[in-house]
Structure formats: C-alpha cells, structure tokens
Image (cartoon, rainbow, N blue to C red):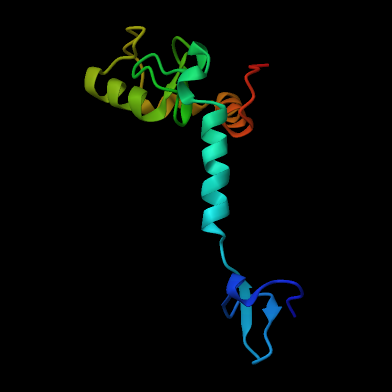
Length: 127
C-alpha cells in the first residue's frame, strides 16, 4: 500500500506496484511540473554553444549527434547523419578518400558519452 503518497499522485495501472484500497493496482504519476522545472535549471547551466569546438561536427558545426568515426581513412568524428549523407552524395569522405562506405563508420561511444556527460552535469570542465 502506498504510504505518504497523495492519491492525486497515483494512477491505476495493472502493472503497478501500489495496492489501492479498492483492490486495484497503481503507479506514480509523472510530475511534469517538477520535471519542467529541473530541465529549465539544466539548460541554463550549460548551453550547447558553450561546448568546446572539438565536440562540434566539422560538417554542420553543431554539437555532434550520434558521433561516428571514419574507420578507413582520416579517423575523424562527425554526426552520423552528416557524414552518411556526405559519403552517399559524394561517394567520398571529406578527406577525399574514395574507398569509403557508410558501412565503414564506427560509433564513437567515448565521444557520445563525453558529450552526454557534459550536457547532463552542466560541468564546464572538458576533462
């Protein structure tokens, strides 16, 4: 049974973990107002434009989304969509290598994690 949780914060759900007095089961409702308030604080702490240039895609100049690494030529990182579109349209990499396929791209998990960590923590350190 939910103890100390207002009924207004519960919603009936057959897969819930709180047993209600009427025999139904409930889960906690998402607190949208609190979430929005937290997100406002997060976005004001660190703006995407403040990130170091190394985290920006050389093609679109935005912070890399789904960073990938070219594995057969220049070993540079780009947004997945940016470099795939470039390779598909030019049949070459930005370094002018022509033996490149979009299938040769590797996810750059280290860079993805670093970008996510910086954006989540709002930390100005890039270490």
